[in-house]
Length: 250
Image (cartoon, rainbow, N blue to C red):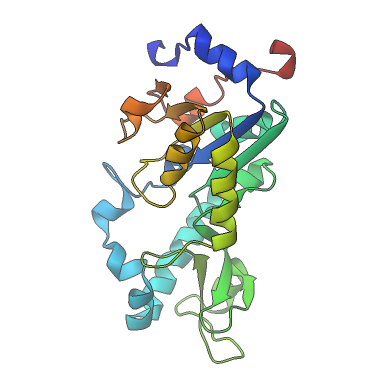
């Protein structure tokens, strides 16, 4: 594929990289059968995020929000990691330092074998009390109460441990992600529309640090013209097509 042609100067920068960061979005899980949020056919084309993914929506109709996230949890639980997820597990072995930062909440990176994933937007695998913060397994919570959020001992309600619109990212997770982006020498943005901040700001940090920044996305993003290389292909095709196959290759 022409879109997967990697110029030798980019290959050399990949081979010489010591600190690599991968920033992943919903496009990585699309090939596992999970819908993206933006773009053609995305979830937010068919549903209103303010009715399903905000604290206000949860207060107004907790049952509706809980059932929607129960559906999303079941869909994610039935999905399997795809070649992009497994390729990123192999990427961990190619660099002295490697960090995977994801906007995804489906847990597929960890299921594929990736370690220490920084989940910027939280996780669907955990339910958290909206009042006291107590946590429990999301699957167990859904099994106990499939139609409405179960109550906590403190009197609060359990909700998915994801970051909703209008909420702040976990400051510790965001700080670590920003630190790694600001000192990497190779940054791969894969399967993300690059429109949601502060997450998209990681790309800017990597560029200011002088990193080689590569984008993998079938469609252009606001950052495409500023990338060192754009691979216009699905994640499951482009990510396994690594410019750095092994340390020996470097």
